Length: 576
Ligand code: ARG
Image (tube, helix red, strand yellow):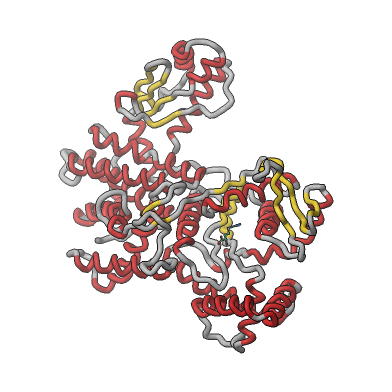
């Protein structure tokens, strides 16, 4: 249940009864201080402005028609016209019981949408590097979150598997007579690619062969297709190992590379020309967009076909958006790429909307992100100045976690150490990234990433095991908690309220693709649990009903942490 939406709807109804003009959403927020209640409504003020009456007066009228008796113990007007809402404890308690009895912690069932999430998107014949981390894990958190809410999520791994470089690679493999070898790894491909590029630049005969292979590949030549397939599968097999290690839900079935749109491109060019959207300019086909200006202040031209007939990254993305709408039936499309691709996407979307390939009402959203920086404030590199390979980064995370847990006196059985090191190391790495607002750059620092204190994965995983152990130590089974929940103490109330705000957090992540909101929520929740735990006796409570009530609060806390971490793609462990 979403308390914010519930209050917002009720205020909206009151405004309708009053006949006040209001079309947007009623703004409701969690109060920042307890003297302002639990929630605060502030949009009455903007409505009052429109109809020129004093906000306080309007707030008073709203209050006459606002029905919140079932959930609130007190509703009052404050300041110039805020409405403060104090929730009933009995209502909070009953909602906690409902959440405990629900599979999805009591969240509202949504109208399912088909949502395409474009993320990860590495390039073929290149190893994934640190630059792919954010798209992969933020995109995956978004996919998990939307799926958890009941949406039909289509994961689209827009792999860079098409382009002139494949002509070079095929020609090079042929030259070294290695096209049939089956022990080639991704790092070999990367080396071949460098060598092929060199040949291409230095040797005209090789270059023309490479170019002819591009044409052949595009024309569906069997030999070229076979070698190309091999390049793709070598790459994606290796990337899949990274996804598995990262606990990312992408599978080989989610690969929807650039190549699949190739067949659509000639028709799209024709269609855009016919519609008068694209035109020829100096031999190339260009779309001029009034909404983007070039340096001279003229409409910016986006090339969609080169002079030599070749297509571009933008052309593929036009086809791709069309495909996602027409064939996949998207209701919403999200793109996780870094901020440098923002202009590119806006241009593509302007074209697909102009052409009527995607309706104006269908949300196309770029959930862009900033960069990972080294301690020197420059893009994160290895000590020798090279790009950090993702596989090396993950290995280091696991090794560091292993050291950490073997050094600490922990209860983890020896045979589970490796597995636990993976969960902790990878969890820490992911959480450190996901807990930052994605729009900002951040500095990569192992010491902060693998810390037990602060808003870190270790802190959250530890908080989880601590609650689990309360139940274990006391030998309590959740099914035996049958008494109705009561809450009285300040610490219980604060914890209960926060538990019931899970849906508000997850809904924000679903709308905005901002997993840091979930991290922040979980961190607050764990903090409130600590306070509750320090101040309220659980096992030794004064009465059975209080004991059970507190156990229930603890139980819902552990489930909420586990579920919240699950939506982030972070695993929990039962003992630490
Ligand atoms: N492969 C691209 C890159 O590495 C990212 C693709 C993003 N998705 C898209 N539809 N353009 O930069």
